[in-house]
Length: 357
Ligand code: G3I
Image (cartoon, rainbow, N blue to C red):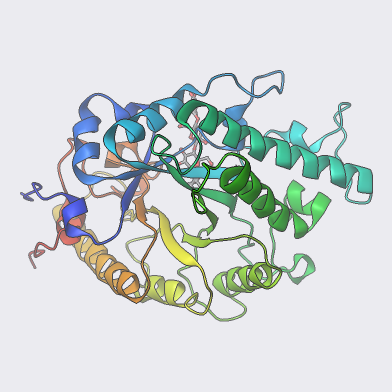
């Protein structure tokens, strides 16, 4: 019995985003999307593998990307791109010679080859999105941000890799691949394909999960901060820090605010990029637990408001529109809306309604 007539957009002081598929922007979910969100993140279809045909050529058409860009263009929405350089959902051939052997970090020719492939990939994504929707920063192009690099920090300390994930990118290029990715993204999105006069139209993010579990130097967040500080010190064109916040209802809610505050000393904007809070009970979830989830979301939204007051948040994005569409549905109804498009207690918290005891 939640009154869900208030738009999240009227209640929250920052842009509110949601991860979408092509299905979200049509049919029954469209009305809910339009009522509550003004920004979308493509859940899977701007990832590296989504841009290639079986013969490794760049696609002529990415229909899901088009559907979502079309929605944003027609409805005054913004698109937060996800993701340019990642270890997952990325074709292996990108890292291989034609005979299938891997490029080697010991060969400068191989390293240069991989840099060129990265640059070409990023350039082709930017070219595709600007050929169809106009130059970035023009009135017709709704793309405002991109996760340039995703999930590069290891979960454990791993001093042998400076705390960085031992991905193919890292094995071949070392930490330098992160600098390269931002340099190439900045070149493509904010220069080559930017509208004349548009001032830095696409905000370039690094993005990470599990930042809510402590901030000291040995923690994942400590290592995330150290990496970003190195990037800033080297003059790498990075603009923003993303916190995925794939939470659990039994997480210590204080950890999320601490994670965001840990970056106050850096000259970068912050975003919550992939928020969800499964109950860990499986489905169906009982009423009492859904109320607990509402109170958990309430404390998160209070914290986001504090962070936003301190320094404007770029956006807060829910990782899916309705529970049944979530990658974590079976861990327990993680989102703000139920499968029947009704607001839950988490939604009620977001719009400032009281959660019953
Ligand atoms: O499209 C195929 C479909 O043809 C096939 O029948 C079906 C059978 O399994 O799989 C479908 O692909 C799935 C795809 O989602 C689309 O639904 C993949 O198996 C599945 O692995 C993929 O999961 C995505 C996951 O990233 C992959 O890493 C989730 O939807 C997506 O929510 C998730 O998002 C990530 C972020 O990108 C980065 N941060 C973590 C987050 C959660 O893992």
